[in-house]
Structures are given as structure tokens and as C-alpha cells.
Length: 259
Image 1 (spheres, rainbow, N blue to C red):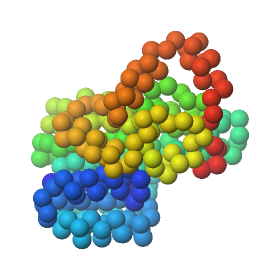
Image 2 (tube, rainbow, N blue to C red):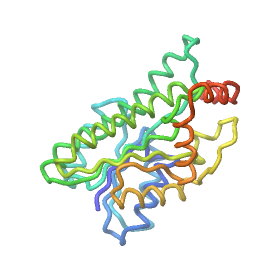
Image 3 (tube, one colour):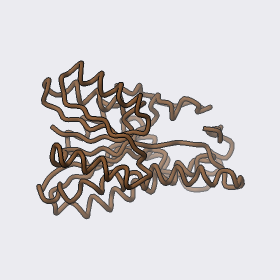
Image 4 (cartoon, rainbow, N blue to C red):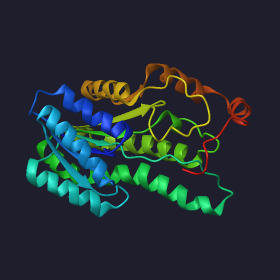
């Protein structure tokens, strides 16, 4: 199996890489890991390679920069051919408020990473996957994309956009034999959630979340919320009338603006 994964230097990305490595017979997995932080990424690659004997290659870059991902994609394709699975996992979460001019750059960063970073991740591999006639593209969205959370306008909007983008892509590629999987995790104990000042129901550790997410990918499901309890929460949130939602969330604690 050949897997290309972004955001692989920390949090859920590392957990996904380890879960794939543990689930494949020694030496049978080719894993392309992409992230910004070279030292951390190289350490993950060494760890997995040494523990499982798989082929693990690091690619340094920023998903916001198309050329960075295109360069990594071209290198992977040249050396290994088209991947079986591409996972757009890189993401950022910051508290934002529209009234502050200094938050405009934070809005841009969140959208460029969480939405355009996903587009940049898939684009280099699509032609080769289409030629082969199969493959799976996986986008990490979030339950936060179901409703607009106060204080997290950039993050909620970016994840809502990611969900819609992935749905469009799924329909576009279905005739080409390419599966598109939308994953909407709930709360996962990563650096992204470490500063949240509110309770996080059904919080999962990264390794446990990764195992569940891999099951969804392997099953070829089009859309899934993990864990299942958050799927219920998500359905309730989606169904709440606006006046009830507005009252219920008007005074909730908000993610700090300083990331």
C-alpha cells in the first residue's frame, strides 16, 4: 500500500502514520509524509521506518504553497507511482473575531490551510490516479463545520467549506474510479485543542481516533463522524432552529484569539 499524508509532524497526522504502519505487514507500506517542520517530520519517519521496516519518505513544505505540494507529489509519483490513498490532514485552528483588523491575517491563514491546502494536496495526484482508474482521497474536516461556532468563525467556516468541497470532488470523481472520503472528527487531544477553555465531550486520544478513522477509510465510506457519539451531537446541532441555537451559544466560552 502507498499512502501520502499531510500534517504528519504532530497530533493526528503522526497518529495516522503510526496506525497505517502498525496495520500493514513489515516492509509492505510506502508512506509519504508531508509537513512544515523538518526535524519533527524526520523523527517520525525514522521511528516508523525502524519499528516496522516500511519505506517512509519525508517531504518538507507548506500546504498553503501549491509549488511545495506539487514538488513533493512529483517526487513521490516519480519514485513510487500513484498512491493508493492521499490524506489531506494538515489544518490549523485559531480563535478569531471579525472586529479586530489584526485577525484578518488569521482568517486568511485558516482558510488557506484548511481549504486551499486540501485542494493543493489532492491536485498533484489526480491525473495519475485517473489514469490508473482507482485511488482514495481523504479530507479531514470537522464537526465544527456543521454550525458556526462563536469565536471560531474562521475555523467553522473553513471546515464547512471543506465539507462542501469534498462533496463536489466526490461527485466529480466517481466516474473515474476514485473514492473521496469526508471525515469529521469530534474533539481530539492534539495541540489544536490544547488551549480550548471549554469542555470537550467525547474527547479522543490521537491514537484511538486514528484507528477509528482508518476503519472508515478502509470501509470506503463517503462521509463519517468520529466518534459516533459526536455524530448524534452533530445531528442535533444541525436540526436546532436558529433562534434556539443563537440563545444556547451566545455566552459559551470561546477559543482564545492568540494561537
